[in-house]
Image (cartoon, rainbow over all chains, first blue to last red; front, side, top):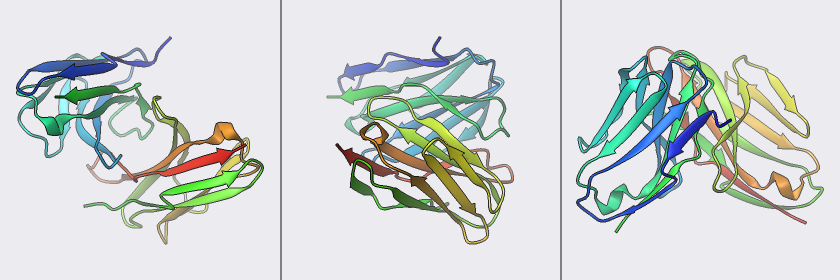
Length: 113
Length: 113
């Protein structure tokens, strides 16, 4: 059983398109995160949701909009994709916002052409 | 801005060698320090979570130490094996309302047979 899953694993799209990446966790965790692995290989947090409420929103363009329909899912929608959005996006979850144990998904490699 | 630094950036060792690398982090407002093992095309996998100054953790041939007063942690691998080849990430969890992990860039370890 996959604890934290992401779809799709690979996404190739053109500039200007709108795309979504989905994340699901079956661990019963309250908190979920989106990270971006940038070109320098840094893992940087983008967003965090706790029980469907946004608790962390780093300096991310408005074109990125997370949505949490329930605490087991956190989706990332990206509007008007740009070349610079090409990266690997990782979803993670933790038991609670104050719990420092995080479990990562396999990543989604987004390529914008 | 939190700085989490890891050194060296990359490391090549021969099978059987023992090795170690460093993570430095802010010594103030410390909650926890994570070590993750990240193989290419996989998700980061938690190795250790360390919270107390002087903590030492061990998992098989891998161990870690923590000095929160001076802001550093060492990860040691004894008798490196080719399957230890991966990027080793450390991540700092600060206190207060900053419920997020700040990652270092990682140390890429390659173990040659």
